[in-house]
Every structure is written in structure tokens, then in C-alpha cells.
Length: 288
Image (tube, rainbow, N blue to C red; front, top):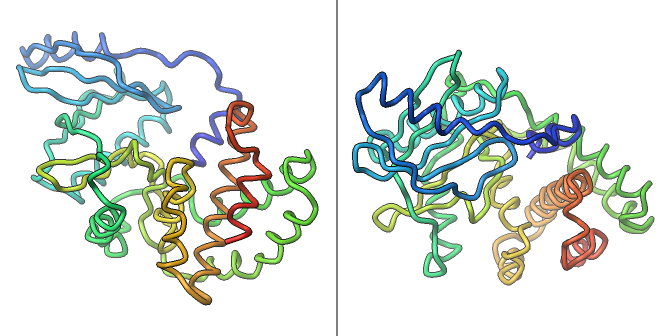
């Protein structure tokens, strides 16, 4: 999420450069293969994504913006995918520093309603992200950056009347919990765990789009997932999963994410189209 906040804070509102035709020509010239573009898929803030047939097999092709840090993010995602799924997932990085890098992943289907929250949690826990070799990737963000941006964003929400005094003070009361998170053991976190990044292969769950990955804290990703509007219908499970001090800790992580997402929605203007106001979304979690 910090990558998206960084994008909008620096007012990168120009069109994404479309490199798919470049990839098509490079692959044809250097690999003597055929690439047939199928269609553009829903893309994120920082790149364009396509489905395409490469030598008659369907793939997902992901591009990145011009610039060193965008190239490093797609390289980071490739390293993570190869380490998490190894030979189970057909995944390659194509290109070079001059033309740019292209992430090629076998075509997967997104999760459907038959896949339960419990299956998503179990699949996520199987990744054993605590044991991920911290020498394999370098992230430009840390959990300290999350904390620092959280307090800045909270003040902006309050000063601009998106939340009221009572909400602001109730969240600030959790400052000790936020600070204690700094002392916890670091986990590799996905950073943007949403339904659009959860796919299936042979009934097994696969998590894609790791370009926002960073070393954070336990449960960050699952708390992040809970904060999506479409997941409100199972929000009651939050109370089932967590209790006591663990509940307060996890709720605090949710509030960190909600505040940062709210700040992002102000930067990109999407809050104007949301069915719930920022104040109401924050209040939902304060009342848990």
C-alpha cells in the first residue's frame, strides 16, 4: 500500500506506459516464439497486466512503470513467487534493464465463493512466511515506515474533518500497542492481500502480486484482508478468531490499515464514490 501512497503523493497521474507490444516484438525476435495478446486485465496503480498466449499456452504478463524502483518491485515479486511455489507455478522473468522486465505467470483463475475464508487462512499459513529467507529480497519499505505513515495519515484525516475528535482520540489511545508492534519478530508480508490477488490452481490457493511485499508483523496480511469492503459480511469472524490482548492487537493492525487506506482514498479521490464515509468505516472497527 505504501507504494500506491508514494505514487499519489508524488502526483504520478500520467498514463502508464504500455509495453506489451514491446514484449511481443522482443519475444518474437529473441526467442523465435509467437505471442498473441488476449486482453488487458484489471491493472493496479503501478503497472499493466495482460493475458496472452505464448506458443499456444495462456499466461499472465505483467509490466512495470519506467524507473529503477518499479523494476526492482517486479523483480522482488518474481523472487518471492519462485521461492514460495518453486516448480508448482510456471513463472519467469523476461527482459533486461534497458527494455524493462516482464513477469510471466501461467494463467490462473481467481478464487470463487466456494473457497472459504478458512481455506484462504490455511493456505496463507502454509507459506510459512516467518521462515522466508530475509537475505533473498530487499524491500524499500519497513513496518517502521507503516507506523510513521499511519500517524501522519491519522492527523491528516482528523485535521481535514474526515474523522471526529472522539474517533481520533480513541485511535491514539492505541499508540502503545502500535509502538509494541515494533518489537515483534518480522514476517514477510504480502502488503496488498485482497481477493483480486488470490487465485486457484488445481483447487489450491495461490497468492499473486507481491510487489508491495515488506517485512512486517504476524497477522498483518489477514487483518489487511478483513478491511476490504466486500469482506464486511464475514467481519463477525474477527471476534471468533481473536480474543483478549490478541484481539486488541489485531484490531489495532486493522485500524492502521483502515487509516492508511482512507488516506490513500483521499489522495486518489476514490472516497467520493464509496458507499460508506471514512468516518463510518473507522467507526465500524472502533465498535468491534
